Amino acid sequence: MAGVLVGLVGGGFRWCLEHADRLRGSVLEAAAGLGAAGRLVPVVLTAVGAAVACAIAQRVPHAAGSGIQHVEAVWRQEAEATTARLLPAKFLGGLIAIGSGMVLGREGPIVHMGAAIGSAAGRRGRLDAQDAQDAQDAEDARMLHSALGGAGLAVAFSAPLGGLLFVCEEVTGTVRPRLVLLTLVGTATAVATSQLIVGDALVLPLSAAPAPPLWMLPVFLLSGTTAGALGAAYSALVVRTLQVCDRLTRVPLVARAAAIGAGVGALMAVDPLLTGGGDQLSERLLAGGSLTVAALVLCLAVRFVAGPLSYAAATPGGLFAPLLALGALWGTLTHALASPLLPAGSAGAAAFAVVGMAAVFTGVVRAPLTGAVLVVEMTGTGALLLPLLIACFAATVTADRLGSEPIYDTLRRRMLERA
Image 1 (spheres, rainbow, N blue to C red):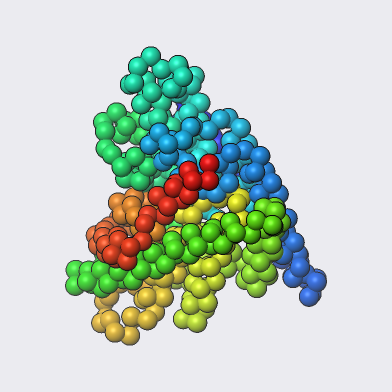
Image 2: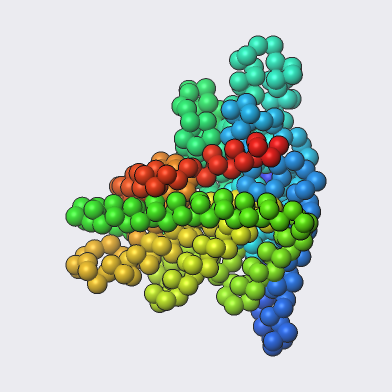
C-alpha cells in the first residue's frame, strides 16, 4: 500500500514537472517576441520561483535540498524520521523550484517523500520507535523508511533495480534479505503505479547502442578516470558553495534564493539548455544532437557552476539529474576530442555520453553499481553494461585517490552539525 502511494505521489510529481517544463517553454517563446524586455521574463520567473520555494522549505525541517542525506541519517539513527508535513512542502516547493528552471533534480524530493510515506506506514503499523515492542520492530520501521525512499528513486527514473541498489549500496550500505524483499515490493508497486500516470517509456531512450569492441575497454577506463576527477571537483564545488553561502548571515535566505534564481534565469535567457534538470539536454546528446566542441565546453562549464549554485539556494531539489546531464556532456566532449585518434568501428558519441553519465554520477555519489544499473534502465542500453562497469570502477578509484568524500556523507555530516 505504501508503494502504491509512493507511485501516485512520485508519478504525480513527475507529471506536474513535465507540464511545468512545457509551460516554462511557452513563456520563454512568448517572451522572445518582446525584444530586449523579454529577456527579463526568465530572470524574474526563476527569481520568484526560487524565493517562493525557499520560503516554503524553511517552514518544514529538512525540506530544503535533496533530502537523501536525511534518509541516510535516519537509517543510521542519527536523526528522526520526518512528519507528514514534509510531503506538501517537498512537493510544492520542489515543483516551483525545478519547474521555474533551477538546475536541480526531481529525484531528491521524490526519494524524501517516499521515505516519509514509509515512515508513516511504520507508524500506522505501530513499528515506530515510540511504540515498538522490541528492537526488531524499530529496525523494521527504519527499513520501511529506507525501502520506500528507494522506491522514490525508482519512480523518479523508472528504474526499479536502480532503486533497490540505491538502498543497499548508498542509503544503508548493507544487503539483508528482509531489506531486499521490502525494497523489491516497494519499488515494483511504486513504479507500476507511477506508470499509470507518466507511462512506461524509457526516461532517456537510445535507439541503437551496439556493444563496443573489447579493445575499447581501456578507452572507457581512461574516460571513467577523467569523469571521476570531474566528479571530485563537482563535489568540492557543491560543498564550497554551501560554505560560502553560510557566511552570508546578513542576507535573508529568501533574498539569497531570489538572487541565485535571477542568475539562473539570466542563463535561461541565453539558452534554456543551460538550466533545468537536464533531461532535455541529455536526450539531445543521446540522439546525436550536433553541438560543437566550443558549445560543449561552454555548456559543461556553465552547468558545472550552476548546479552547486542552485543547490545552495536552499530550495527542495536533488543532485542526480543535473549530474547525469553533466556526465552526458563530458562523455560527448570526450568522444569529440578522442574520435580523431580512434580507428574506424569504435563506439559513437552516444555510447560515450551514456558511460559519462554513470561515471560522473559515481565520482560524486560513489555508488558504482547504482550508477551503472540506473543509467542502463533509463536508456535501455544493456549492451553497454561492461563499459559502464569499467568506467564506474575507474571513477570510484580516482575520486577516492583524490581524497574526495562521497557527497551525501558530507551533506549528512553538515546537516547534523547544523541541527
